[in-house]
Amino acid sequence: MSTQESSSIINPSVYLNYLSTHEATIYEVGRNINLATLGALIWDILSSLPDERRLIQGGRGSTVLIAYFLARPSALAMVILSVLEQTGPVSNCRLIAVISAAFQVISTATASYLFLKRVHAVYFGSKGVQYVFSFLWFAVVCASCSLFYDAIHGYQEIADTKHCIRQQYWAALPVAFGVPLGFDAFVYYAIMHKILSVHQQGQKKGWRSFFCPSKGLPHFSRAVFEGGQQYYLITNGINITRLNFSANSTILPSYQVLLSAATVALTSAMACRVYRNLLIEALHEVHVDNRELTKPVFADGQAVDVSLSLAGEPPPKVKSCASSEGGCVAFKEV
Image (cartoon, rainbow, N blue to C red; front, side, top):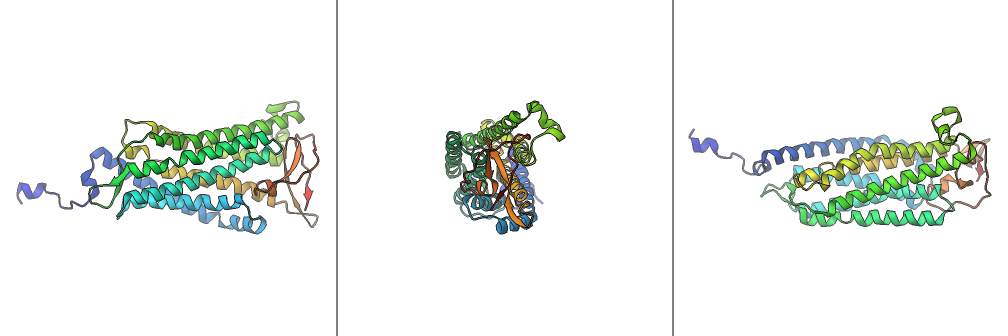
């Protein structure tokens, strides 16, 4: 075989032939991450089907349930399209990128909406706080929409290989990733402050009693607090990493979105898990003395019907109450 024949490219349509060694490595790593994310998200959706059946049977139609059932499927669609971009064949990279961005916006907005309604439930009666967080949630949606600009101008086909890659950096990307991260932080600390401050009014030891199992928060209040704590601590690391990648203009554009699909999938899965566990815990108390009851969560010393406030419906007006545990633990008969 001649030297010219041995040095020729046997398969010129292979996309890796048009990328540098470093860029090809990042491309392959990103594809493997997206494939692993796809499998994990499918497992999460399938494993939660029995619990979701209980939610449908015991819940009420509302915007929160709609958001719940949109969060993970939209994240799944976004991950599938991300895998498709890197495995091909794709005839129109920009169109696929725009559709993927649309599903990412939907997933981010619905996952954030679940925690928006949680803030509304905890701060029941505080209209000013509710309006502030509603505005912040709207800012999350608007910031996420900047992904469309990045999808239109940042993605293109690798030569004629029917594979897509992000090849341009846009400053709007850190905004789309940073605003939801800030919203999660505000929600977490607002709920933590409210629950622990109300508990402090009923306990002389105040904040220290939370770390003592026998003298800590009331059962349901602890469930609300720990659910938000799990979500924030688990998703915070990957969200911060994704933000740092996107804000670093010295790395490859494909490197900046390396964890995008994984972050959306983990955020939506954790948001749905926290909402699902809390509502199932409330539905667990539906029969007491052969009567259907619902369990309230306290806010400003008032009993709030959890099944209503978490389902997005305005809770009924009830008299304020207090107990030695720092919150109302009475049940409301329905």
